Length: 250
Ligand SMILES: Nc1ncnc2c1ncn2[C@@H]1O[C@H](COP(=O)(O)OP(=O)(O)O)[C@@H](O)[C@H]1O
Ligand SMILES: [Mg+2]
Image 1 (tube, rainbow, N blue to C red):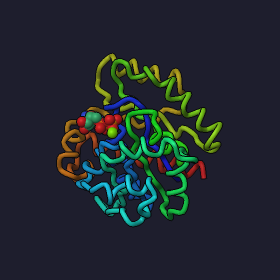
Image 2 (image 1 turned 45 degrees about the horizontal axis):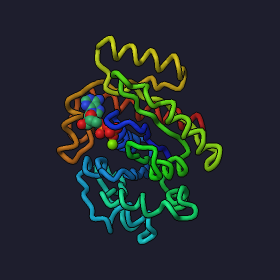
Image 3 (image 1 turned 90 degrees about the horizontal axis):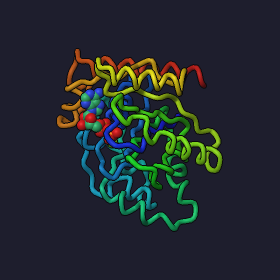
Image 4 (image 1 turned 30 degrees about the vertical axis):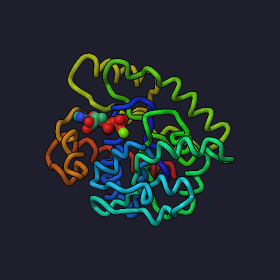
């Protein structure tokens, strides 16, 4: 199962979710791979992995390397295919290629992993389209703050276009409320999410938590950085909920 973590807004918790959900899923699945397709390489750096362009998804997207040659291991033997800033150039380079939307799908099609999580850039550009074309499911993190729902309709238009033209199996696995605080705005946004997307909203809510903010600086997921914090509890719960949903779908 290939799951893209996507929302074209920046700072909504995509990377935090990709990293911590991937590690959480290691409890239930032996082989989990996190692919970082964001030129900012935040997910890779979060897990203490800084790679050159040659040893990153940039080289893989250009067909210069096999994905299995660049995979590293991080927390709890999570496998990571790291990003590099060179991916920004790669996105421009592949624009004129035939089958430019399907490059990543071809790269992942022979992988043996039970779960592949893709951390996407904050845009609806060609790298994100590649992720949507490769994915079976999408998790959409939504920050429970002002302007959270803005842009979601553009995003959903892109999803339905990709589904229609490139990837008929694509589905939203769920909307994930992130950065939840005990405030009226957080409650409003959560209510709104339920109103619009009903049973597609995850029961698990990711609360605001300072440890989640600190963990990237340590090169570790929340599970290896700090026990007994909200971030740990919430992502542990999300891992269980996602595992359960996947089990029911297969
Ligand atoms: N639940 C949370 N509580 C506190 N800070 C968070 C939480 N989730 C993410 N952050 C912080 O917010 C910022 C943006 O999160 P990030 O996951 O990088 O978003 P995106 O990948 O969507 O741009 C980062 O500094 C991250 O550490
Ligand atoms: Mg990110």
